[in-house]
Length: 156
Length: 156
DNA sequence: TCATGGATGTCAGATATCTGACATCCATGA
DNA sequence: TCATGGATGTCAGATATCTGACATCCATGA
Image 1 (spheres, chains in turn yellow, red, blue, brown):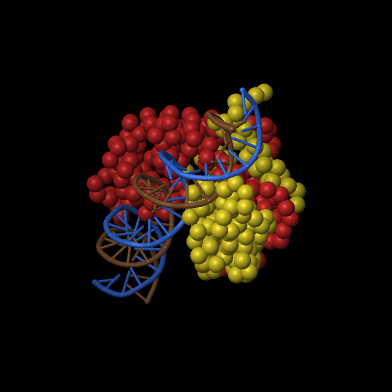
Image 2 (image 1 turned 135 degrees about the horizontal axis):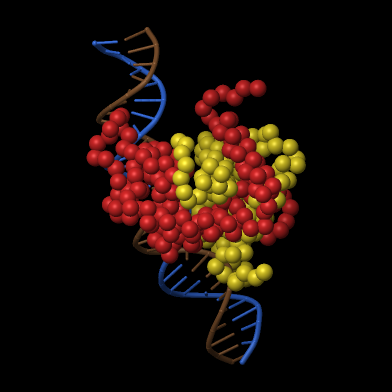
């Protein structure tokens, strides 16, 4: 598993490492969530709803980094399971504001604790300054990636 | 899209931001790879093979962060398309060393250039020092996550 | 010599997620 | 008033990826 080559140097590529870290985090989260009958996407959806009640399906999709079609399907499941509720008709436009049920809130609690433990483990060994630096770096990357993305022509 | 709440603070959660950055990177990569008839996983597989010819399917899977079953399926496709080759029988054990064909190498070239441009865009605005800090932080996170993962009991 | 653990490759089936398409619905401006 | 762009929600079908299971195959040690 070590040799030279052209192209992108995987060992030192920030992009590759980003994917590696994200993958490790996701795996760790799935591992602690599975015994609770949860997945990362389900958890993300519930956590978003806990923090911002009334989010639409599309907003939840963007927050959980999936398409709105995927979130739409997931919400139907969560609604059947009684973890979230939505009005039968849209109060305004087509938006159906979604909320956690008490049952959903309970399910989220245990999941949230599990995820928090994973995040703490991930941050073990980093002091405040390092965490700040990491946050800044990641925010910069997100911003740079979005700026150039298809849509608006970039300037200066 | 802004309000307070309990649980994990998404705005300042390094885990959430990690996912956000990784998602933005993946989206940007898919966007430039699609016109080339490529996906991130396909590209990753070819790039790994370019840098380390003879990798096994399982090793490629680990390098591309998918299961060995997924990689096995992907390799069958790539083999049919003539981008990679594998011996009919395993030289030792069950391992089938995989290699790029000239055609695979050509396909990789354009994809690699596209990906490189995305990575450069992502790094725009970060100086050498910041990149080093980001690398160190991400490596630390990966290590911390893997240490605690299921397998061996952690110590001191 | 032989049983066993660990790794590999792959088939089968389940599941999650995506793309494409369509029907709304609001805001905007002619 | 009315056409239009942009956003939303969702159905349908395609695709990617996963879990479970099985058959090897090597290395190891009793």
